[in-house]
Image 1 (cartoon, rainbow, N blue to C red):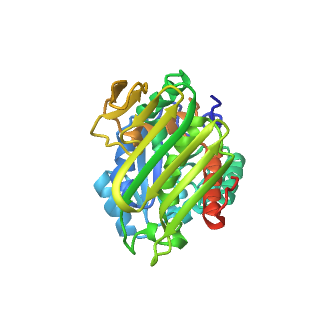
Image 2: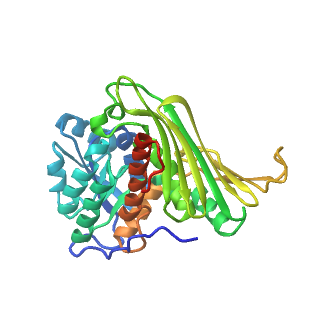
Image 3: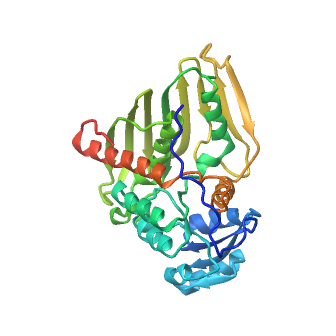
Length: 352
């Protein structure tokens, strides 16, 4: 299986903390995902520490800093980027701000971990790729899913031929939320379900096949009031097989992925955000019957995939590995998402 290209690890930057020192993080914004999930997860890792947080509302920054035990609160994003103690920046802002603030962070010499999707289109991501190369910093898209042991095991099983030749991947991801104040309900903010969660089955399918799709098809329905996409079905044709997915922002909470080979299948019970407090499970089926006679279950101890993501990122910054999801990889994913939007409009197969 051909691996998705990974950006080479960088040596520790001159003048910064030593290779064994914790990576010093700053966080741009007080988004729920940052305050409730990512910051506490980073703080659990001895290889990382959060030293600063910023908000355009100084009171919000100060409140978050007090709650989370962060030393410094900045009343602007610019002030955090000027903070010499900050080595790496986590960006949990709305989608339309991902690339603009990533570019500013890179220009300030900071390493960047940015929430998915890395941009709103492939053209934006190309700008960030060029800026990263000029600055010589690490930049990664925050698909924490790629670091979870259950997915490392799935890829290992496929590579070992456990299910024969990989031929099909199917996925579903849905939740119900219809809120005019939610950034996901705003077209101008890069809202809609395809960018929000459709990016997950797309990136995992590309990662499993180790290739890019040659063409895609898509059916998309928009919310009549908000105009963002709320129900999406997509098909990706790869050189060695196919992937299909459905995602919804106004349907019952559910997620699942299945991987089909010529001699078996793998089912991932909670593929995208398994709770950090519960074991994760996959089922490996040799396909001998339809009643589960050939199923072997594998269970994984509870882990926090946000913590794992931060640890892999810190290792890359310190010159001991590569970031989990590179800008090159994010560009490939964004090109597929762009093609899916085009296919929904044209009613035809489109090439990424």
